[in-house]
Image (cartoon, rainbow, N blue to C red; front, side, top):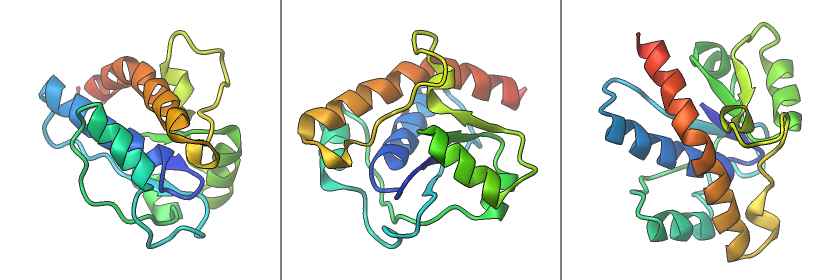
Length: 151
């Protein structure tokens, strides 16, 4: 499960990219989801700028409705991957015993430890492209981790 603030930009982008990468790897029975730590965007679709950037990069974009993460979702997921440290804090408040919480940048070997994926919502289309590249940079190692979990 990918997590950002409102579940309309970063986390659904990561979800769609991960689905595509998992399909390329031939993974079956793997489910990727996304959610937010805030309910302020609950019920809304993915930001149109995120959709446009994903499509321009050749990723299939499925339907998406934003929602806030629940303790049950956090506990049931094999991996919970947040975009920012603040999201990790909020997730730990919701599910204090969850021990499978990570930053997306943890899967990017070139990233500075603890680095965050900044919210493109406040910027323009070019910020969404930067976000796309930051997410893509973590996918190779993330898919290795998924392969390990699949045994």
